[in-house]
Length: 470
Image (cartoon, one colour):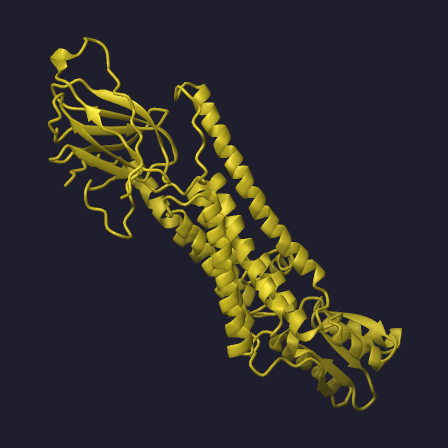
């Protein structure tokens, strides 16, 4: 068993540890309080498009009446006939259509644009008709499928988004996986999540259309989330979860229009709706299911742009990693420029930790650095101090060897580190290593008695980097 000696934390380090542990829960708290709650609380109409089959003067009068009751709530578009007004709804060019008449004005609705949206429109136009002593007739033009209560697509979108994000988090712990393996796993996971959501939503629940395009857009949603999140790791390190959660959950879900129709959301979320992946996927599924595949250009372009952004970030992150290795080599951190590992930089653990050298259970962090310290004739040296520092001299880890002279540690950021072994009465030995989570490093040390060392000099035992299966 290894005995790790933890150093006493200063107040500043305690605060930093608390901040590192609490910042992500704080993002969730703020997201639900200041994103979900404002978006879903008290839905109010905003510039809802309604086609009106009436002369321009009548349309203008009705617009003034509605602006007085709900300023900015509705945008009326004058058309020449009731048939043209109906076509505007069927083609998804308007949310509703209205044909004024002296005693029985006609309102045409589209529940496919949201049941709550249709309910608000009926209430407003019924109230307007009653003020003139008329009775409003309503006709549903685009009803939702029996299995879709209106919110089922929202949960299917969440079923694609959350696994795609958590798969990226899991990949940061996939030691030994190459960049290609990471990407292939995320693509395969996206196929699985999209297929499961499609089969459940389309065939088991009848909540989304049974159309191959539905499966395609669900898959594009998973890749928008996973590839972009994975690409952010190289630039944000351990902070990438906060950015990904904010983009793809806290902002994307409320602005999607799948839970509350877009026309009832506040301005900020209506602005985000055509930009973020979840809203575009929701629009694509609705247009496929109810509007004969119309208006798919924008959702397709935006989702493909997110996928392309993720791919570009991954490539740029790899180039950044290569340049870092070259800079360190030129600065003398190694005598040669090593062949760069293919693995992507991964999320840095909060703090490097010592491990028991011989006990590594499934699910535990595998060691990145192992080794054995012995004397000149091969005898194990217990209780030898092992210190690991970064290239700038900052101490990363301080531990000791066990009774077998062995040590193990993990949690280091990929890159070069200085490892020093020292014990009372023996000459300390230091070596510089390239630590990489995908390739565990074994570094042994031989410590000679101090009287055999040349005074005033430190001898460096040659580094032996051997990959082991733990």
